[in-house]
Amino acid sequence: MDFNSIMMHIMLSLNKLLVVAVCKLVCILILVPIGLILWKREYSKQRAKRLHKGTVVGFFHPYCNSGGGGERVLWAAINAIQTKYPDVLIVVYTGDLEAHPLQILDKTEKVFNYKIKNNVTFIYLHRRKWVEASMYPYFTLLGQSLGSIWLGIEALNSCIPDIYIDTMGYAFTYPLFRYIGGCRIATYTHYPTISTDMMRHIYKRTISHTNKRIIARNPFLSAAKLAYYKLFGFIYGWVGSRAEIVMVNSSWTEEHINSIWKCPMRTHKIFPPCDVKQLTLLPLLSDEEKCNSIRIVSIAQFRPEKNHPLMLRAMYELRSIIKEDVWDRIRLVLIGSCRNFEDEVRMKDMQDLSKHFALDENVEFKLNVPYSELLLELQRATIGLHTMWNEHFGISIVECMAAGLIVVAHDSGGPKADIIETQPGSQNGFLATEPEEYAKIMAHIIRMDPEERNAIKLVARASVNRFSGEVFEREFLRTIEPFFRLKQE
Image (tube, rainbow, N blue to C red; front, top):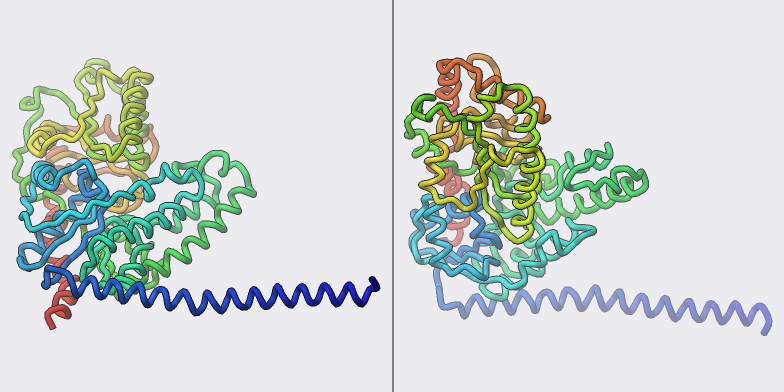
């Protein structure tokens, strides 16, 4: 076979491959849109056959029974809609398969003091494991985001709402519910899935719970991860901007969402609801009424980003700079909840770490405490402790301030931007970063004159009214009102 014959054979083969590739591309460009159109029509037919002919509002919150700050937002929003629009059917998409609806509502009343009416339907989702980080040891953000689409399809197949409100930040579900389900889309975003701060950590090769040591120490892996984050951020910006109404919980979150989603005209900052009304009514007890005990309270779910180890390290440092008789009166009370088995293991690790630091006699762990016990703990405490880096807002910080505690929060995110003021004359708390800094501030608070402590407490209480549940509900209803007006028209 001569050279020309070989070249001819190669050209024919390439032409065949090109024809096959073009045919496949044409099929994709034609068949995929047709399939999506048929899929959307099927959901339209299902909506027309729906028994409830009024407005259906679906809240996508797979962890609705967790008892954290995000869940307080969920139930406050539901309570607001039930009050203003009593005929609306509310659907909550949840993955808490083990919890009966009455158990969920009972826990909501005990933990958040919200008595939700019974006209709430719970749609139980069986694919929640696909949004959990443990499923994706690598490419976690992408895996969880794609998993949320799979979970969203299950939700949409179970019930097609008229208005879809995501209260957990699953932005990849927005195109699905908007373009396929034909829903109006609103979101209350607590924390961007990816932020410029996270990218900065990768660029600087800083070790954190989102950037493992092996990656941070390798320049090639760091460069690859940074490229992955930038690509993911571009996609995240597109899907997030599909929301017609965007609500964010703090100035910090607003800044990051606007930089990534690029829809500032549709973005509204609404501080999350905090139980300040009842907490500000708690009497401020004197040191004698507290039996001279010094209780330091933390309210946070046992999640990795809450950084409980920093609290224990701060306590370890505190022990070395105060007198032994004072140390004997100090108790760190860690109040929180566990979402899953991993959180339970994490709490057990914190108990072991407290023993390792010889702090176990000065540290208490309280899991899923009822609201009445929470009030008692806040009333007995002197200091509120917060250690999460770039906390999006900090509901527990506001609650501690309202109850009359002096808060030491992490010098970043929402606490720094919206809550804590450290200037003399208007100081309502303290900010810290390292364990030694936390320890020095706590020692300073303990040594303060009672009148000086009370002055900070009173300023703190006066500053929290803007974070009340009433303010949240009013602003939330005002923001989503166009959806209901359009539905009525």
